[in-house]
Length: 334
Length: 251
Image (cartoon, rainbow over all chains, first blue to last red; front, side, top):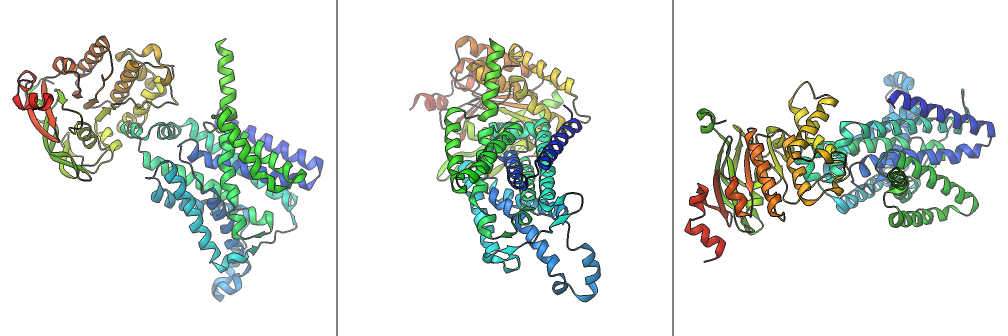
């Protein structure tokens, strides 16, 4: 299938989902759906570095928070524009600020991409568990930085007030839901494009054997940097609408470990070798967590992730996609 | 390749190459010049620095002293993939296939990343497929093209290793113990294969412990002991050298 056709089908599915939710008319569906979609973007982004290249990034929460705090920063600038900008600059700046949310998302993508590049330069010479520890350390450094930066709220957090109504979509949550759907389409299309390109072949050689990859002429460091930038940018974009969704953010919620754990667990459970894996994993785990939050308690969410992860590592190390592929291969042989 | 002018210009020129690992001196000022088209055998007891030498030539490790000149270009400081693109290919002592790929896909990687990086216009999809099959025919793996590398036998794995190295269209191929653990007939198979590759104009350095193979293959023999070159010349003369015999049998 060609990429335009792929995007068209995704858009059709997204539109169908949106109208189905609107038809039911329960806002809760949009709130819960937003979280699941956010995890699809995070899991797909993680998989570009973690699944395709085999570098386990434990810093997803850090990149997510970069997106969150880019929005908080830009929002706060918009709120305090009169105090921040000298008189003669005020008129042109007021034309730009407050920034519309889609622009904030793009800025967040750029910022997170650059930080991904920086992290890549610092850590990509490390392998395996050392790389994972380094990315976790980066999250701690970022969190400390945010806690001590009072402009974006510091440790006491920041309020971001979403408008009640938006044109066309009505409720603001509908608008957020659609934005997240667009990000899902962007993430899945990017992942699929990479998978089918020369870049994807290069990533797979890095995952399989980095020495052999270099000996075959693959510029491994450069490719890994591409992966961290793309992966980081997508995670940042996933985090950017979050302050508007939640209304109040503080470092502990933006840097929550559950983002890191979920964005690793979802691709692992779904399967890491193709774009379908993180999608399936995020849909399954994300929905399960939402259901558990309503029926039992949100405290049970990480337990579910842990149990499922153990189950899959033992029973199906290549995830659901791998399991299905094995079944198909068996059937074609007999 | 037998042209006198090309024979005088060395393809690979190594001067005073040195490398330490902590207090252990792995390479102690090695000089080596390899003319184009030559089949060079490199032998030495375990731990004599053969693999370190290969790693320093190919950029997997960086040498600390001395220099490596390849095809008229100083390659010191270049990382491995840059040297591969210059025309320096190697196979690994223990086969390192890309396990998530088929045999044909393995061979395709250097075509995509090395040959296409050198040549414009790039190879088309069908040209890539043709090249893959041609290389797999050369090593008699064409029947296994669609198989995954986990389904290959030891000798087939070695052949794939060589085919993938050859796919980068190298000027110099370094075969690092391509025959360890293989049976008699398999060893003969690989030696014949390496000679075929040499006849295509590729200069080959072969590192090997199996003396029968070394003697059939080599036009020149170099012996490395404790990071030093102790003998270099005609294979028949070298193996009668007292120092070499001493190093192998113990004094």
